[in-house]
Length: 265
Image 1 (cartoon, one colour):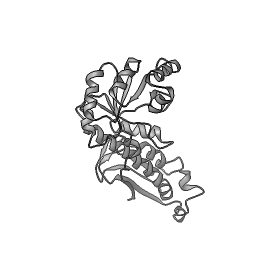
Image 2: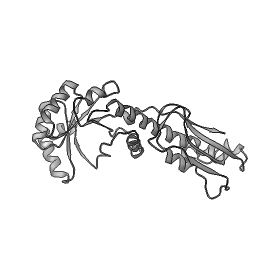
Image 3: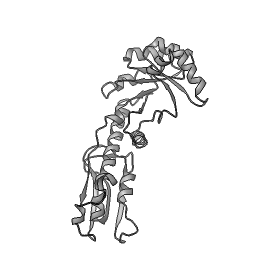
């Protein structure tokens, strides 16, 4: 909260320091809530609060909300509640937005074998929380960062002189527990990558017809991930091709915050 409060809340200082209030946070739109624990931590009574202070969590991360659904409520000093209000809501609204958008993608792909996964297109410093929100929305996580998975993209392949030398270099440097994923722009490149030992193929910006052909040719030989330009209007067609995963950067880089607000009762 330091960036918000810094050296003190000059507006909150207008409130009597011993004024106790009841407060609640509620959703203003339909979605999936996430970040409840952070809000609870920021607003929970402390050892200095009187016995009548409390905090009640009404919902857990991953629960569905509708407009007017109460998420948390409590009683505490007015200064404390209003000091933490914006920070608590910022976390709740953003993470709930990620969870809600993920849930929409998961629902759009329901009934297919494809799992919806995220990418590294996250806000710096927020990756762990955003990826947690994706899980709360029913999605799954891709690698956490550059350290926990080999992913040879077009620039790696260009720098290393082609698919085969790139995979050979990855095999020489990565330990045996890491899978090697290769980004492929066409099916010939995918076939070459699998033949060279790639275990995961990222089928980049391929139309559904080409994705179906990729599944027909490579299913069982490698894990198949569709990626690139997927949105809520196209994800169903992509998922129905039979790919194993559909990665969507928009889950974290373009999620619209779920509106929530705090009210003093």
